[in-house]
Image 1 (spheres, protein in one colour):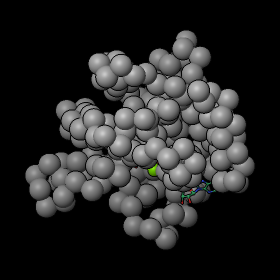
Image 2 (cartoon, protein in one colour):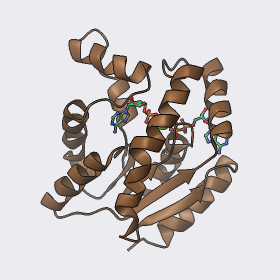
Image 3 (cartoon, helix red, strand yellow):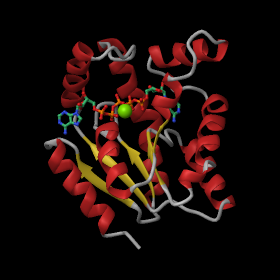
Length: 189
Ligand code: AP5
Ligand code: MG
């Protein structure tokens, strides 16, 4: 299966993908992780870091080659989980074109929903434990805004296909995963 996770920062995309990757035995592709692992001492790494640190989207000319190279690897032949991609309607169109060329299509879009108060609380809590450069109050607010303006329209882009499943992400991680598993199992071939 080819599954897209869409949700605002802190909705639990990474947390749930880690579980689903084991359940389905298909790789978990996180563009955020890929971008964060760009070498910070390289010119591209510095450029990427400058976008991430202020909560803006990294431009497509940097994101698309990284993502399509990874998607073309053999372990993605039977499917994958896309975490944090696509994030714009343009990325969604490019993904469709890439998959079509390979004779594939998306099977499911999981829309993880949570209110911004919960999201901010989760990310500020994570900031005390981990060291993500974008988990500051100011950058979290920018990321939430970018989600609303640039990523939420991707849901409308997919809506007519009947592949979007809404998941209430303000539950325990176990409850969220149960809802995801139900959505996945009902569409497994
Ligand atoms: P990315 O890495 O994708 O970050 P994000 O979308 O902002 O979301 P997070 O990773 O913070 O949250 P998540 O939904 O994965 O939640 P998590 O499971 O971690 O992107 C970062 C940046 O990279 C972007 O801002 C952009 O600059 C760039 N970028 C990435 N992709 C791009 C693209 N396609 N195009 C352009 N630029 C791109 O959980 C969060 C916290 O909550 C954790 O501490 C977790 O333990 C906790 N938690 C999870 N679930 C629950 C629960 N059910 N109850 C309570 N706590 C929970
Ligand atoms: Mg994440």
